[in-house]
Length: 299
Image 1 (cartoon, rainbow, N blue to C red):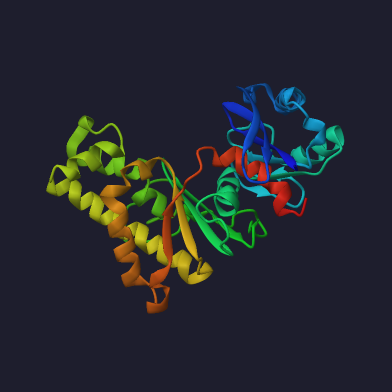
Image 2 (spheres, rainbow, N blue to C red):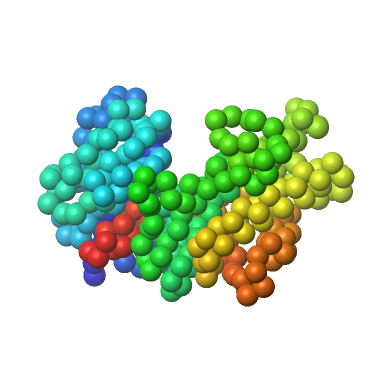
């Protein structure tokens, strides 16, 4: 049975797991990532964790999921806001040198999407687009079992897609960027503007909408249309068999997803209306998807 090492490296914690081709986690180790102590400490800690995994030497390869865009050819982070000092650090090369097996690095949303495409909700489909709707909005395009990262590592970074130019400037993203209009942070911002401090998070807005509050319902209605515009833009470029949707906002999917799909069908060409929308099904897509990276490269 072939097994692979998956590493979910974040700014707070790092997890290392031994995973089968079918996405079954056989062993896992979790520790603080020690990100503020610099790359050398982080890498030494991570490699020590690998050596704690029973039978790690028998694995076929290593995959690492990291927060931020990645040069997937050279296995380096292009931006490392949450991992100081890791910009252009040779993560993959160092792991290969120390463990004598191929190593690959990709963005954490990409590896989560890869997991859902290979062993999750999109299993068996040739083109899957994974979207995470949470604090922010991210995505990943998986074609024939491989993540499409693009020249700059930004393929799938859908947060900055403009869904309406006639919106307010919120931050560094484009005016009308979908993340600033339909993410968890966006819904919380809009809710606070209307209802004040009783809104702690997007779920509070959804609760008010379910109770029939017309202002909250208006926020949700606008969100559903904004998300539908985003999905239609993606569909007209990638035309996936399925959108797989994950992230914390999907806990309230009963409030908005049916409307998103209905709006989507009105925004795309008629033959595209049968595009599937499915909720992500894996509990640990990040670490499983990281382990899938060597598989997607033919190992």
